[in-house]
Image 1 (cartoon, rainbow, N blue to C red):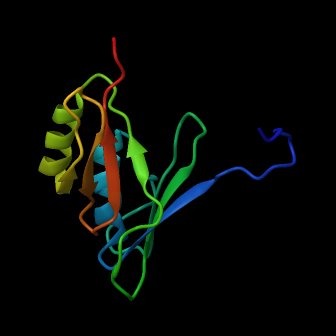
Image 2: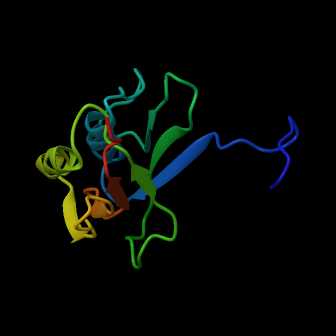
Image 3: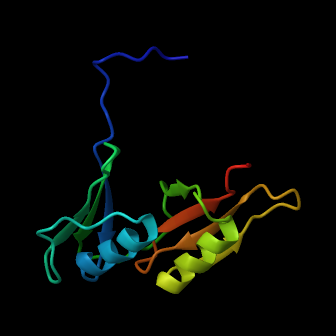
Length: 130
């Protein structure tokens, strides 16, 4: 196991490319995660930002000219809090996500693969057991 030290880099920002309005994609993630967009973000801006009040990575949404052409090599795995996985999937779909695959196992483990409105994949994992 690697030792941790104050000299290692930290993840400051996770960036999402989009061909549409970064503000709109930011709104999707803002609603899904329950975190507000930065106060100075507005429709038509070239980027939008969601900061984690607990100090985790910032989510940055940036307009790019080219569309997504392949499966993401990196994606977010989300864990529900206060809702079941099924409830979170339903909520994500209502916000504009698409379900790509359901890898839920008979024992309740596994995940559901979703895509945000720009096609960026993310997984909704099982809720924490009580």
